[in-house]
Amino acid sequence: MHNKELEILKKENESLKKELDTKNREIVQLKNIIKAFDQISLLAQEEIAETEQTVQALEVAEEMSRKEKIELYDTIEAYQHTMTLTEGEKKDLYGLLQSYESTLDMANKEKKDLMELIKAFEISSEISSIEQKGLQQNVEKKLGVLGKAIKELSSIYALISDNKTPHTLDNVIQELNKIDNK
Image 1: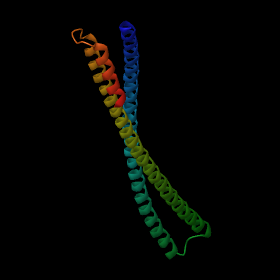
Image 2: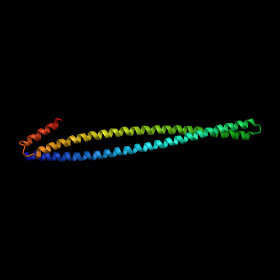
Image 3: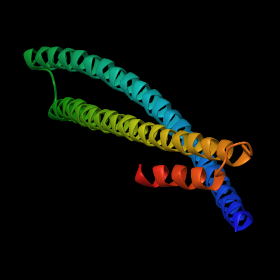
Image 4: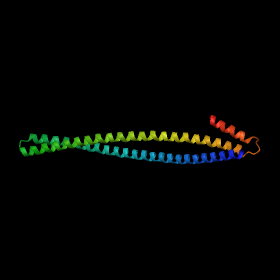
């Protein structure tokens, strides 16, 4: 009877070893996922920096457009003071002015779209950080459980391998009951 119980314990031990190996593989996978999230977060930060540079370039273009618009108004004012302009020339100047205004409107719209894109990247980056922290906590919990299981298995091995202790089977059963109660 004693040998059967030892065989059962050995089988359970092998099963626990396999489960521990599975958990170790899961931990490696989770670490790889965390590493991937880190890389995604870095890429998102790089894209945010690039987008901010684009916004700055658009702001410079907008400022240049504003200066060009002021210069155009000055030019139109000069033409109005002179009576020698023809109707065709006046229409051309008006068309040019409208063209500059529509260009400025488009630049403002693109700036607004880029600002919304920056906000979306920032939100995505924050979500990635939150998910990463959750995964790390989950891995830490699993490592704690595995550590306890290994500690309990070690104490059971010590009891089984100690042939000097009388009633070894009783001691093993007591230890197993302690584990069940935990």
